[in-house]
Length: 405
Image 1 (cartoon, helix red, strand yellow):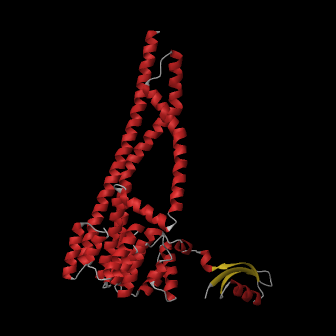
Image 2 (cartoon, one colour; image 1 turned 30 degrees about the vertical axis):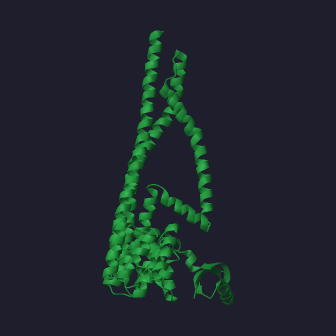
Image 3 (cartoon, one colour; image 1 turned 45 degrees about the vertical axis):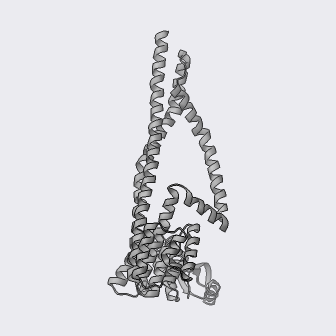
């Protein structure tokens, strides 16, 4: 029964801060009135959230999810506790307020008869579809310890990839921002003085000075216009993607963009193959494995093709032939799946495909970040070069004017 915290005063005028259990807020008010208490304030106890329950409603993010699965792996694996008891223990004893609050929300659902996977779906900012479906399969096969270890690896790999991207871009972005700051200082403080001196001395403006004026015009007028156009374009794209046809068409276009399309393709295939391998290893049948795995695919065009692939397999088509028919794997991956069909085991095959596409994804992202870093460094170098040439040529022009005078 829900718990309500209240502040009230009794017949003697004393203020009372306490709590009461009732079916709803109205029932709590009636009970307090029956006790001859004048209610000043009343609210659900969960709204107070003294130890992170409010944060739990928002999920807590990836960090909280990783902490949760690590604890569950320890308690359910080495500790041998049922998952409901493990979650209850975390909700009572965890010193991490976000983890404690999230565990409380999860245990509330578990105590009401819901599964852990069903409860996790309430927190999409913390548990993505891949985690949810892995837990769903683990609960169906009573193999949660194996699933928890796979989810931990999945989250750690994703965090490592994100860290690599950030590290690769941090230095060139810093240099680009530093160069931009130097150029802005030159444009708004030094350039007007140099132009005034050159005008007074009768010297002509050199090309770097005119180039800096053009860059300054672009930065003060062009960039705001570009930002507005970009914002309008992104808003229009978001509106277009709200429709099923727009989402499918835009995702299809994304797959055709050089490098970006390959990154999106590798990411989806890696997630699909990882989940399929884990589900097969957990003893889930082929139809259910492919049904759950396709839900982890982000690109709607790819998801539609995986759905067609699953339908073909259910109709009796060989798995390798169906994958090749809908362009979901390349020839080397198809050969790996063909071996699995002959041996009757797809665990290693899909695991190898997941590793292959994960490595390919990492390489493509490194290539993209290296290219972006090169462009950033090139822009920074060019801006500083123009800045330096502008100063040097201005000084030379002033020297020649003074010599001629």
